[in-house]
Amino acid sequence: MRPAIFLLLPQPGRLFLLLLQEPLSSCWTMRTLCDGRWQLSRTEGREAHHQEDLSSEGSTDARSCRSEVSWLFNPTRSEITSLDSGNIDDILNNADVALVNFYADWCRFSQMLHPIFEEASNVIKEEYPDKNQVVFARVDCDQHSDIAQRYRISKYPTLKLFRNGMMMKREYRGQRSVTAIADYIRQQKSNPIREVQDLEEINTVDRSRRNIIGYFEQKDSDNYRTFERVANILHDDCVFLSAFGAISKAERFSGDNIIYKPPGENAPDMVYLGSLTNFDLIYAWTQDKCVPLVREITFENGEELTEEGLPFLILFHMKDDLESLEKFQQEVARQLISEKGTINFLHADCDKFRHPLLHIQKTPTDCPVIAIDSFRHMYVFPDFNDLSVPGKLKQFVLDLHSGKLHREFHHGPDPTDVAPGQTIQDVASSPPESSFQKLAPSEHRYTLLREKDEL
Image (cartoon, rainbow, N blue to C red; front, side, top):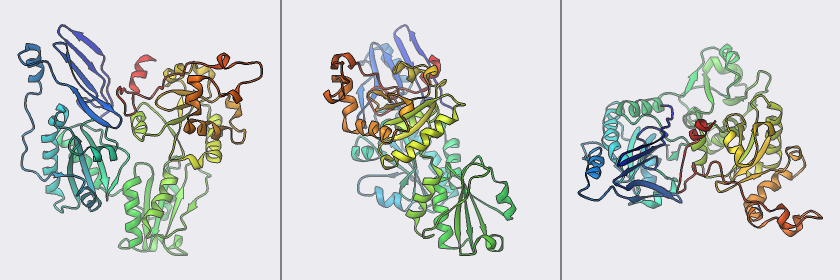
């Protein structure tokens, strides 16, 4: 389901603010004011809390609001596994696929999801009776806040997918219905690898996509099973293909092997040279090929990227300005590869993201522009033309990590950074607010879709 946005609608005695990623999806996305008091959930750090209940007993408006969700969760017969600190690792590590519902009992959206989640579990259990094929599990985040913090749960309910204990980066954001959840699990259980019947098929693969191709002597082998595990995790980022036996023989002159075909008709193939039974090595190599170092941020993936918890280094560029993007990609790879894992490298369309540019007093006519969004403030790279100056971009990122950028915005530049003839007061300024902070776990979250409405 595509994200939706609703506006602030005042009504007598009631005020609704609906700003939804998916309608009726989570407790931080909907606020209802009844008889002057909020029902509101908010996040503080990484843990969500209930701020205030509905209006006091006896209020007509309170009763009418409560009647919309007057029923409470009444468990039915199902095989939902309750996870705690003692069993979570064992259960998830032994499950081919696990869908985990992180919930809070006070959250009405959690209450609404419980029977749907249980019925979806019952449907799937009939199709996959082996208890380790598919596991439906739940975590009471109020009772197990350590688990909620471990998986960065900041809204309720959140549905996370796990494969053999590894949490997938994309949470379930589809419709909250039995059919939709069951279909999602069926999709996750489907084979992500397309088997080719003739090597000529390899010559016709979509070269605008990232393709990983495995050549194996036989399907019933440890080599292929490891390849299959990797494909199950990364199939959203790459296209996976395989060939076996006589069909693959011409490509197996030195044994089973895996190659990567990058985007571009003339881009050369890359060969995996490590052990074919070492999952960690194959996964790391494949992830490096399937997930680009510099990713595009859009209205659709903005929340997903912020939930990774890393600040953004963003190139704002015009959509057809591929030269600036290529230059940025090259310098990130040259200067900042060691910073991967501490900051997200992104690029954004200047026209679509006019609002963040306004935060730093820029417009699309100023693009290309490089900035850091720390989720507290935005910091502008002084001059795009300095991008290729050795170490300049890296120092900009290091100044973020050291606190220098934050310190200088509040107190002016360090004395050693003041140019001759200037004073600290001449160059000090108020820090622009973060454009994406309300997407990150914090007290006030919002959606980038809001910016669509403001364009």
